[in-house]
Amino acid sequence: MELLTILIVGLLVTNIILVVLYVMERKTATYTVYDTKAKNALKKRVARLKKELKLELAEFDMEEWEKALDEPLEEGIRKL
Image 1 (cartoon, rainbow, N blue to C red):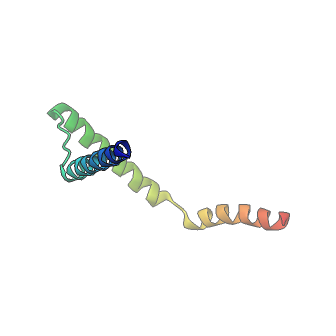
Image 2 (image 1 turned 60 degrees about the vertical axis):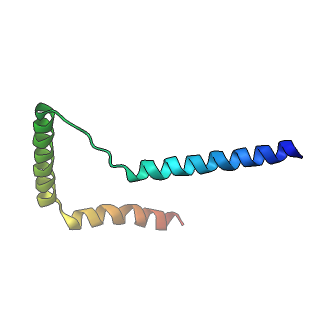
């Protein structure tokens, strides 16, 4: 009976320690430090991707997209 009590207390203490460590880790902020070369490269990449996305959105045809979605739906309905 003593062994079972010791085991239960040990598991409870271990769980409490793990919960405390988890909460502490969640509260600490994580920062990534980049050198200026990497930071500038990332800024250029983000700017390029943003520009590409704007071009794609400008060229996006909503009616064509809806037709492309309707075709598989109609085929599925026909198969039923």
